[in-house]
Length: 244
Image (cartoon, rainbow, N blue to C red; front, side, top):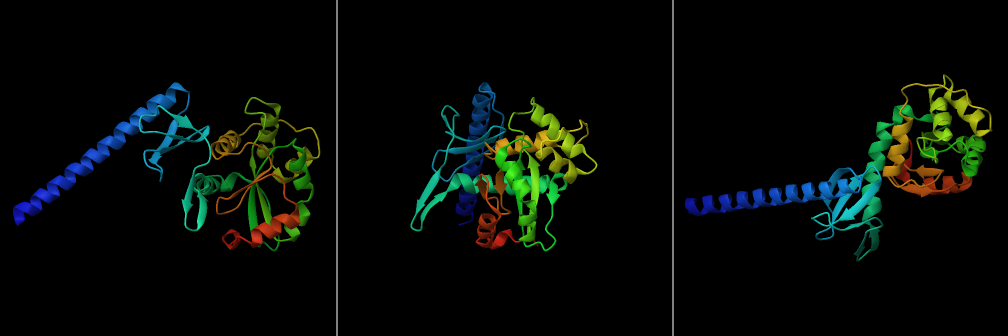
């Protein structure tokens, strides 16, 4: 009986070792093939779909096989008795939540006095709807909605938009600098260690393609501008987004 038990344990350990080795081999192949495309695989894990891997890169979320020979970027859904669930959005939401925690001390915040909710908005200085949202900041705040800004210069890190946004983040009075810049005032150029480039890279990684892009505290992404009234209704339907 004891010998049989030892045999079972030994076999189980061998299977675990083989499985671990197979996973390591798959990760190495995926990283190697992605590198050929200039994509650095930051995390790799099996998806819920058999033989399909989920790969996070600085360019976003991709899917591939165990050899890294095939690649696609898009939405992966799971069909259940309760309907259809987006596995892609579930994975992105987790990364968004972690990122918001990472940058929480580097956001430009317009707090509501009677805070009930908060939203985190990827913004640019020049986009029309970003300016419209900012012009209505008092209305959002009066509804108890705190707005936290992350930088997403749409022109990229080599653009004037990035230079201006970095200067806003480096300002002694960030709120005033943001308001003036969104009103079209010339931005006084400044340099500092604020992680504006990192915020932009984070946005690209989690699927931001335009501004404003609004994140709720649970990681749900709302693309595009929302009026204060629309935003309030959305937040009221997500009790997990209530500020603590």
